[in-house]
Structure formats: structure tokens, C-alpha cells
Length: 261
Image (cartoon, rainbow, N blue to C red; front, side, top):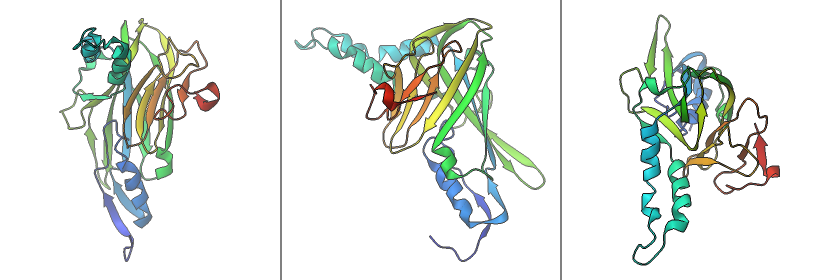
């Protein structure tokens, strides 16, 4: 695409659920090659917020989706050998829905991206180290993600927020539910990582902090043909947590084919 001259303003709605999914932000940043040096870009800045949550009802609801495969005599066929595979497939899927902030187990962490200075390649591999301190004892069922973006004008700024305490948007809140639970007590301290690697497919891989080893993925959330984005959590007392180098094709990767985080 060629245009006769540089532009003063770029404005778009490139946010996907959990901000980075749907791959529109890369195109948005690529378009800056047509922006004048002092031009404006809207949205200007984004904040991705995330925190562990507890939701027993959601966990039970997800688990029950594989109940069909509990049948031992489905027209004479025993389906139970596929039950664990079906359950793993259920927990591979992200959930986009409304959310009650009272389900959060800690204060949210924040990852900021300034679209004025960011490059599209910055979004290909994202690693966000963070620390959480549990403020409410409960089962850690997964992570909840939401975002807000700033439209920074010359005289004022306007924020669009998808936070659970703000009016509902079509982005809602993205959840990543663990198949394997861990109980977190008030005051517990965890070092964790959110890891995103975007390619031809999208997958969200979660390693349970209490169960981490080098045998492969504990839980995997994936969507086909979009890229792959992972969050991997590790207990602060363990230094080795691994994710598959390509969750789409290698869900039981050898140690040499894994990234240490």
C-alpha cells in the first residue's frame, strides 16, 4: 500500500480480548510507518491487568462439560478411555465472560504498552514477570485478564476500560482456568510469569505452580490459526517451570525443546 504523504493521525480499534489476541495490534503498529514524526496515534497507551481468581462454580461447570465421556456403555461402547483427553480439551479453551471482582485472590498486576514507541515485533514474544501476594485464602482456579486503553489528546485524555468494575463491554474479561488446582493461603507470596509467543496458531499454556516439572504441559488453552499466547505460573520456591516450544504440535516436548522461565 502506498499513500502520497504521511498522515497526522492514526485511529483504530485494534484491541482483542485480553488485549493482544486477534492479532490486530501488530497491524496497528505497522501503520505507524505512514505517521508524521509528531503525529498522534489512538489508542495511545494500554494497560493489561491480571490477577489470580477463585471460582468453584466455574470450575465445576467446566469439568462437567466432559461428563459425556464418563459413559461405559454408550451403545455398547466404553467412552471412559477418552474422558481425560476430553477434560483436557475443555480446559484448553479460554473463557470470555463477566466477572465479579470479589473472586480475585490478590491485587491485580499491570503491564503497560506505549503504542507511540512500541514496534510490532515487540508483540511477538512477551514475557511479564510479576509478584503476587494472596490477600484471600482460596483455591486458585486460574488467572483473569482485562485491559484499559488511553486516547491521549493534546488537552485531555480519555480512557476506555474493560475492568470488571466498569460498565460491560463486548471484550468482557478473559479467564484461563486451571485443570489442576492449588490452594493459596492469605499472605502467600508467588513469583509468576505471563508468557506470550505469537505465531500461526494461538495457545494459552498454563503450568500449575504446585505441580510443575519437566514432563510437559499441565493445562493448555488454545484457539486455532491465530497465534500462540501462554501464561505459565511458577511457585516462588521452585526455579524451574517449562512451557512447550510449540504447544500446537508438541504437547509432550522433551526438556531440550522447552523454554525455561
